[in-house]
Length: 220
Ligand SMILES: [Zn+2]
Image: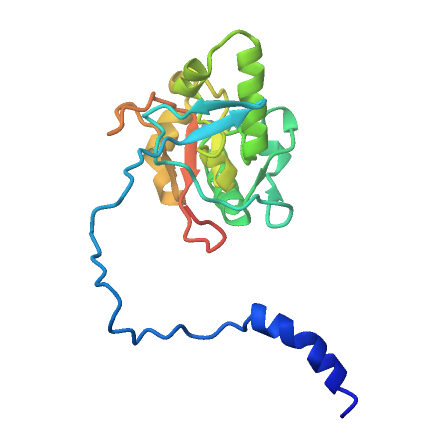
């Protein structure tokens, strides 16, 4: 008896009851034929939902299917937008390429006596939830907020590529910045995400623009 023999005797019952993984013997001619149907056994209608403050809400139809798959961005890769182009010199972050393109555009506008500032840039899904919470605490329903604020997980702001120009409300249409952007922004890679008439009937959001980038950091 080798020193390993008692150990082997001890493990034999285990080897019998817990066989190692092997390929199953598929050559069993007595097995009943299996019919595979293309029909799925269950037909689910997948409703996208979001949880805010432990409460689950169904995403409105206008946003269904548009959830953005994006990793939470951190610093870096986020960079701070030069405070001179931020309303009241606040701290706003964007992805470097969007920030660079925005800065170049804002400097060009400045040459034309157009003062461009932004109210918002990168916002996490967590921050988007905070916006919802705040508005719902003021008495608005989830559906009411979703009419003009992208639900958490659906906002382009979480891509680090979108900005809200100042003033980020209806006054923006009448500011000299809006027509300037309509004429020049495309040349800097920016476009209006929710124009006056959008194919999916999203409300017009004149101050919200997005930089289009082929960045590998973004997966949509
Ligand atoms: Zn926006």
